[in-house]
Picture 1 (cartoon, helix red, strand yellow):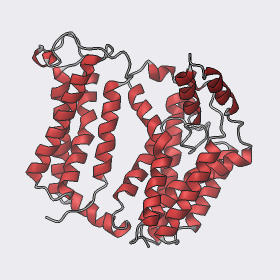
Picture 2 (tube, one colour; picture 1 turned 135 degrees about the vertical axis):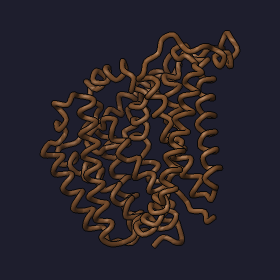
Picture 3 (cartoon, helix red, strand yellow; picture 1 turned 120 degrees about the horizontal axis):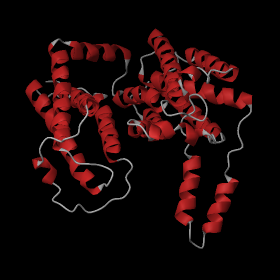
Picture 4 (cartoon, helix red, strand yellow; picture 1 turned 135 degrees about the horizontal axis):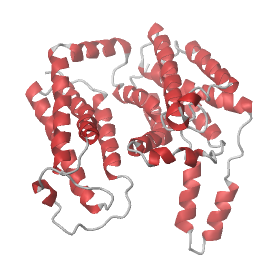
Length: 368
């Protein structure tokens, strides 16, 4: 069977990392378990459980099973081997997480979780098998071949991850990549109670973001939309298809930002982010993206590198919201904070991962 590069591979790795993050958060209070790490496997059915936990554990591993199955099929494996591989991947990851949770005082290892997670991975593999049997995965491969250039799996995966990074509130709409404030905090913590503590405090004080004028904010928002559009142009075949992707990317950006605002500040404030400054930035970014749909793939990648560099520079000048920590209290007390925190990591590092990918596209000999 012919092997084809698939965006399911990087997406499967990312989703596995998301499961690890969600399973081990908050990564604090590690201890050596008093009992055998495998003791939980022989425990009876728990006395207290909720249907929410069962459904969440089932559905949480379903995408992993589907992605692993799809990656295996695209790599030339048979349906049976792909199903077995997806089931083993889900069960192995779940068992590893439950064993590791023995060392966390805030987590409880459960044999039920292993069983339900494995069932979720099996359901995902079953869904993939159903789609594969119906020929839908092959249709997707042919459709992608008409729309995207060869060896574009990484770019497609980054495009799919971009809306996820917007779910965590950004300092301004579409302005991902603000890690300077976290870097300041990390430097202060590392140098605390050391002879260099004064230097750390001085560094934190000197790097306080001054903020941007309205024109600068509009420019940053325009660049925030232009960056994923240029990424799409670097992997999409030249022509009207790029124009369609620009519209889809813009719609996804607006939808993800609106959903993020509604989740964090209440449904009544869902469109509070859509100010005249934001509207101007979106308009400039959208028009610029449409005007660049005919540039060659390598040129689009080079322009994307410049746009991302400028975006990171502008976003770094945005101050952090003093009321932002208060707005996250509901998340920290709820059941979804771990996944919400994973979206934060995507938002922080998506621009840098995209720059690395675009640099590879510029250097590729077969880029056109």
